[in-house]
Length: 239
Image 1 (cartoon, rainbow, N blue to C red):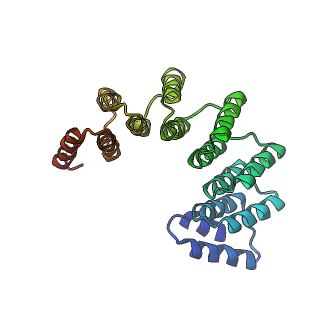
Image 2 (tube, rainbow, N blue to C red):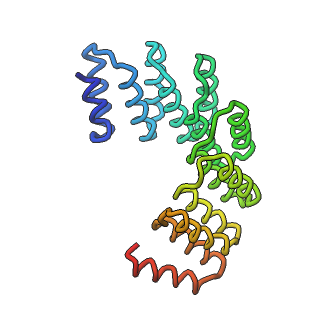
Image 3 (tube, rainbow, N blue to C red):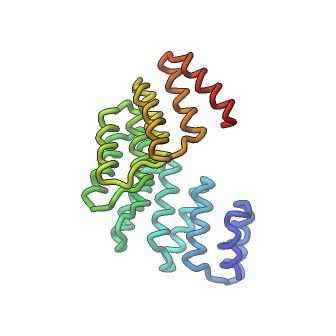
């Protein structure tokens, strides 16, 4: 019963209520299954309750109930909390216990190192991912675009964009938005505007983020009049 309630209500109930239910489940002698452990790991991780997440992970591991989702979730939690030591340790334990490092785990590491500006480790994870034969998805490419863009590494952005178009899944809305932001940082305004036109050609509808990134790029590069024009257009279109 508890497993069902927790699994079904994870998104609807507040964290403290879910935690109370889970603790009650343990006190009453009911055994959580792997799915319930993973749900609670995700809840604690996203709430930044790292101590609870870590304790829960070890409880599940002791009972032989961890799977690849468990490792993915705890790695993401460590990454979000910038606990890089334990994040790396969890990846090693994942492999030691017979699990291949998953795409989700790689993406979590890339996101964590990238946001913290640890570029050497970021590139090492990318290289390790390629050597393992793990194929990138849209999220991977968008992380890379964002991190390289923030660093002003526009040549690297161009290389990754070429790879994405030739071998990857193609650009999605988030890819375009991230690239427009990167081009704005690099002062490549014409390229940023061209991307908006390209989106329409490929029937990818620009959203509010697209236009905000474009307007921000124009403002940062002293294209105030053009920025105002785009802002007025957004207002007229109700975006």
